[in-house]
Length: 124
Image (cartoon, rainbow, N blue to C red):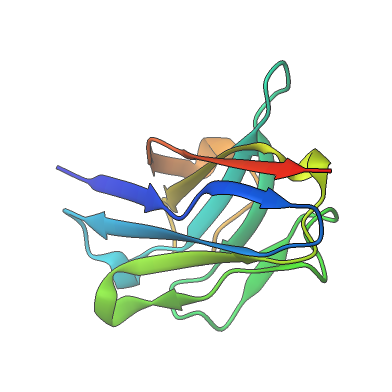
């Protein structure tokens, strides 16, 4: 059974930083791209970032470019979302997800397993 456990969310002031972690189990982690999505109240789920199976390729949504990075550690079955220069509009529940393939996508439908989410709140 695949499990994804996110952690690291919390309350931070605008301009601050947070690092989210997502630990995966029950799968061959290094064979899959990993992604991050977010959802704010009243909004649809939104793509944030993807990292390929090896970590060599990353993709970012426009709102994340230059502020977020998405490293992974295959030895620890963990993917991270390093967020800096946070804005109030980044407030959302953040989800990590396992992609069906090695290189990933911004399309939510290509992700086959999802974590439970971690709340990030950015105060102004």
